[in-house]
Image 1 (tube, rainbow, N blue to C red):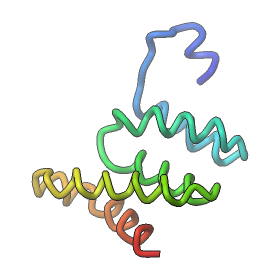
Image 2 (spheres, one colour; image 1 turned 30 degrees about the vertical axis):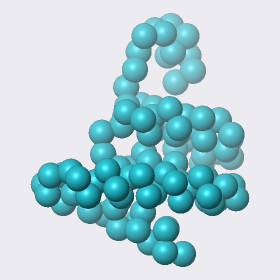
Image 3 (cartoon, one colour; image 1 turned 135 degrees about the vertical axis):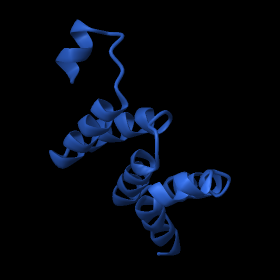
Length: 101
């Protein structure tokens, strides 16, 4: 992804950014993963990026920030159409569970 962005600085793919953030987290580059999740969470369609971002925040001990991410997501999704809430149900369930722990 780094090389891709160097060659095409205007390239912007939500799916690619999410995949990159996941890969960074998987190999232990947590600070970079947090930055990438933070960036992609703002424009990724759906709840997955924000839930993954919140979970990584919790993992690194930033629970208060994670709670904000989860709460904002759940508030936003309460106002969303039912078909969208249904499509994101699994991710919303994870967010709700993370808040309750």
